[in-house]
Length: 413
Image (cartoon, rainbow, N blue to C red; front, side, top):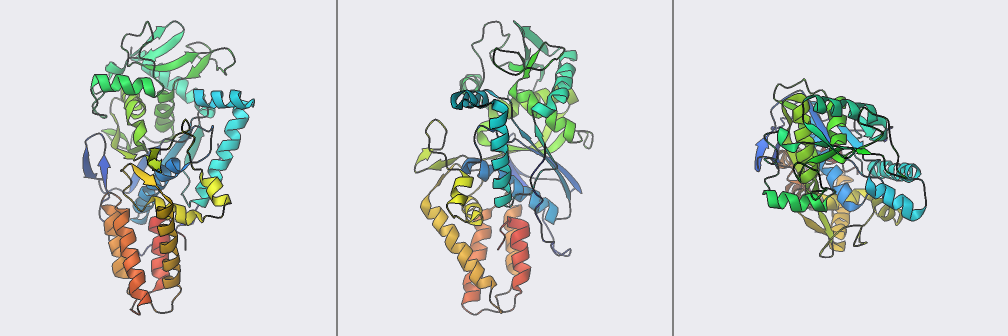
């Protein structure tokens, strides 16, 4: 599947020192520095295209774009892969509700998503892969798991024995009671009769009436959710680079910690015999006016609709990075207004012939980002620099800072 248009990234001075990037690892519950390397691999879970990009999606993809930008600015190569869950129950349900073909609905929403990513200035992935096109590699991955004696059948459906990974559950730090509750809320079937363990994950679903199906050694059907990401990540990223980890970073929203990332990691470990990701990085949820955003509440804010109303996508991006990425937080009109004001102040300051010294503020931004993407500190440094410039401080180069803001924060001014 085609990704979106490439984003120009202004080069940074080669003499700038970039500290190792420290990120909060959900699996270890600690902030850890990534090792200093020339090459990193990152997999970020994509959308289910029954709707386009809402602000929760935007916040997630901006976060991993910041990681991508920081590592690249430090001189490393980053292979970044993202999937699209273009086979899933919510997609089929929405298509049936709207009386449209599920594949046509997916295509229309993916196209909207691509446009949103361009507007938000997000670097496209090396590989942007839909489940439909990944069916052969998913079947191959399931076959490997089956050959490891980690599967069994319930009626005509195939399940993964999650406890074939001795570390199952250790990445998400939930009790079994908590896992069962969350599993039932997020697409799982803990009460299904015939399962060996309520938490065992569906690998292959026998074709149901009115749903698509593909031929496989397990019968005609479609894959379960968790194996899709395991297979795509391990096919498009090189899991032989490191002896202990298949990839460096597994990313997504905090709602994916369990069951999705836990089960994907367990399946990957059975396939590769090593831990899937060095770091499991998750973004907080975005709420609106004191409530969680969700399709059931009908309070989702979509990027494309906001841009169509004339809101600058750079202001949306700025507002979404104005608070720590890992925290659950509220979207408010005041946060957008503050971002618009800061963007205008930066524009005015950067348009001056004489500006405050720029190298110190660039280093402040780098130090802030290296510390678990401390974007509030980075934006505060920019605000203070703007005030100093507008008050007559001199000695800097506006173009140098403008390029750094674009390269590191993805804010094109």
